[in-house]
Length: 419
Image 1 (tube, rainbow, N blue to C red):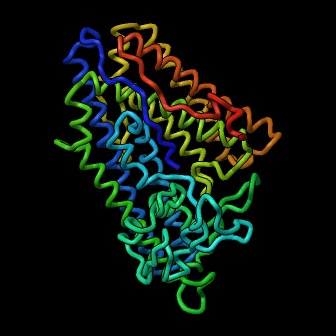
Image 2 (image 1 turned 60 degrees about the vertical axis):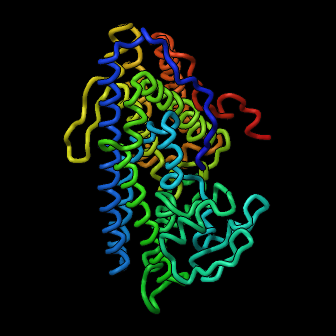
Image 3 (image 1 turned 180 degrees about the vertical axis):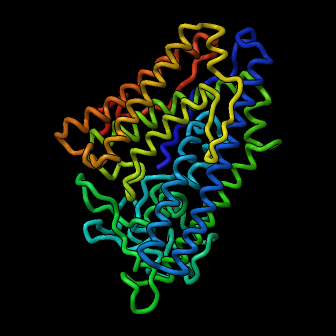
């Protein structure tokens, strides 16, 4: 789910706070890193699209595994762009097309009996588009005999205004490649068989051709959606212009994205909430068990923006004047504090990543009473909160008006989580 809230931030800043040439250079670096990150996301999405084509053309355990590997590779650059949400309305309005979660997967395909059916909150939670060529969506009869990108984008995604009717983006594709993760807080990801894409009598769970059509259409949509954002951050693009036309406002956007992702979104909604509920369904990449990597790269994206440095998938580096330079000029001790806290956060997120890669799955960390798992997750949550406090100090030091960061009940009103 997108967890969008109206921000109360004020965009004006005090005129003497920033030297214009410095601020201009900083926001240009910020825009350059955004463009590079989305370009890398597009490149890896195209590789995923090729792997999906290979799976559909020649279904096998090997081609399914290759498609899964391409999906995992595509997540690394994309997650580093999430820091561009919140402060950038153009990005936040678009983001739901590619990364909305959680999703009611029964909308898309077959699910285990334990999933249940339609709910009061979502009558389409078990619609099973792949299994049904004729649908009723929001009270209207829909011909879904041909599954196309247009059907997914215009009719199915967030159908009837319900956010969990996620029909497109990374997580819809993830579900189609892995299937449901039915392991609870035990180790193990989804185990969709490659034969779900097999032809003829080898097809399992029915509708293999339609499942392939849905996967192909969803991947095609992902590529086109990412191309939209690459264009938006390119020379003359709307997102670049929105950030660079007023450098002071651009600095506010940067800090808003850093603080909101650090605090409400990552520390709260993506980490603390799942731990409070002991619920693996709250994992960001719950079908693939890739959540530990997504958390790591979200944190990396925040660090990238502050330091003005991004390492591209080809090994080249995009870097330039950055927030660290502005803060170091105004308050060297505060810059050192922020830099150190970012390093601490990345170390804590690295501990989670390494533990999960070593066999201690993020699912297991969420289990009630698992003290080691709770310590790992809360170590990162506390570090993210701590670095947000330093971001707030930077806002004050640069004489910016108050910025309201994204919040989370799990941090701000824990009792509300259980109401």
